[in-house]
Image (tube, rainbow, N blue to C red):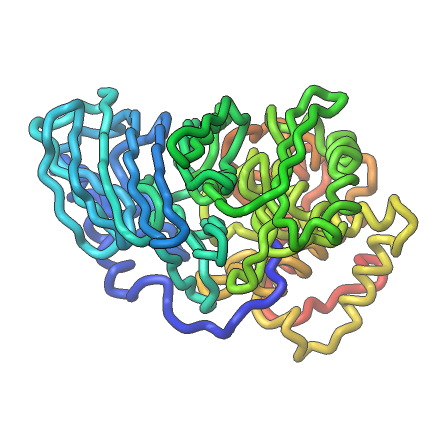
Length: 468
């Protein structure tokens, strides 16, 4: 994610009492056949749900940009990871009009962002089951702990749908945590003249009776927060790269002039990143360039980042790097968000270094020269807390941590680490501890002190010129 403007924090992620309740109740809930209402993430404890894994989402959504009304049906194919007499889905705001589990009507109730489901019979551990949810209403965004909006954000001609970290639940019922990755079919119906863009490959589109339906398929595993259904009046460009990747760009005509020269570089950027990080992880790529000033950021939605305005080249490089770091290799916990943002930011530094700009060392030195009271040193990026996951230290100091690692182990080992990280966790999840162990294994050096200094120490690190 690239945040162009962040507002002050307005609220906490969840009350502390909820965090304590989840920590205390999970074992008892599981023993009683009840899936936990969250996975207990330290930044967003109610995100995701316990007791099952979603293999596949089949989403059918109709949206009217004039009335702003949405009608949806979600079919979740899932597997129970424990005995389940009850389980939760994350769903915010929309009204549920019908719910079945394996075609049998199931009791359900709402509790905040939780849709609590009681199937007609208990589900056995390991059993596969299907949940069908019909829902409708006027979707809107959620407000994040730092005061910004995410999820379904209405625009003057449709909707800008960017769901990091919490917003997937604003437009479909989900197991909304990065550790639960699934394949997707997304069918979007909008008024004729609008384009509806989702993830993966466009299977087809059809116009009838004043409506156009777009069918999208994302086969590689995807976290819910990376799903999009962005709608607007777009100019569309489609082509296939030399590597066989299907590119689909959708651009608001008001942004087309500024966006065109940047998007023209997308194939070369992906080729350059593939040389650094290994084969591009997906069958599809592209961009959605909307006009959504109320959002104030770009997001690495899987295979097709969304931009709230025409991006500059650095932003394109950043969001493209996320296809490896964040999308293919996803977080295990939101506190490790630097693994997404630090890597994507450092990719910007590398691109500049290799394309006639400042060296990464010069960029590092300029940042290190900032005074100790600067926001860069306000908190350690390795555990920022929910209100700070998109703060400056996560991006810039996270990138500095990678440069310090590069300096410590040398270029040959460092770039081996980047490629191995992307390969060994491809379409999976990772943690900072796993990255540290990988770097130590490939470099033969003890790196615990370096990781502690740059990721977990408070204030400006006191490092020698040699370390820098």
